[in-house]
Structure formats: structure tokens, C-alpha cells
Figure 1 (cartoon, rainbow, N blue to C red):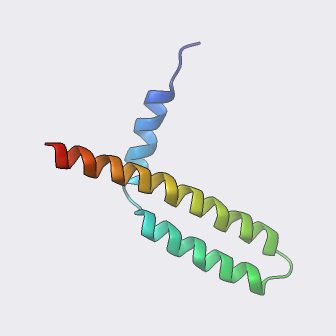
Figure 2 (cartoon, rainbow, N blue to C red):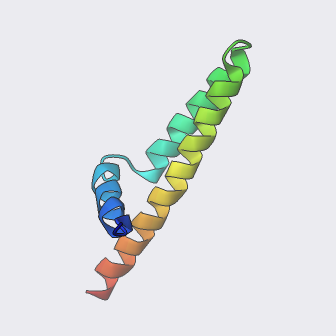
Length: 73
């Protein structure tokens, strides 16, 4: 089977252009606040917040790469 990582990477970048890393961090902060006040779903909300932070980091990497490419042109 052929490696589709480059195709997946391009698709992910296209879909993530809708959100910035700052917006993802803001969502993570909101989810973490919800987790503190929710005894029943706190663990799931905390996990969701952590996932948003991972996403924010990946978007930040893409943003930095694109900024370097733009600077080089």
C-alpha cells in the first residue's frame, strides 16, 4: 500500500486554515474551565482541552513554516 502521508498532510493543512493556533488555545481554555465545574464529564472535557492544545501546537508549527516561506519569497 502506498504512503498517503503527504496527501493527508495537505488535507489537514487546508482544513486547519479555518482556525488559528490562538483560537484553538482559547477553545482549550474554555474546555478546561468547563472541566473544573463538571464532576460528571470533567475527565472527557479535560481530554478534549488537551486535544485542542495539541492541535494549537500543530497549527502554530504550520503558521511558522508558512511565515518562513513567505519571508523567503
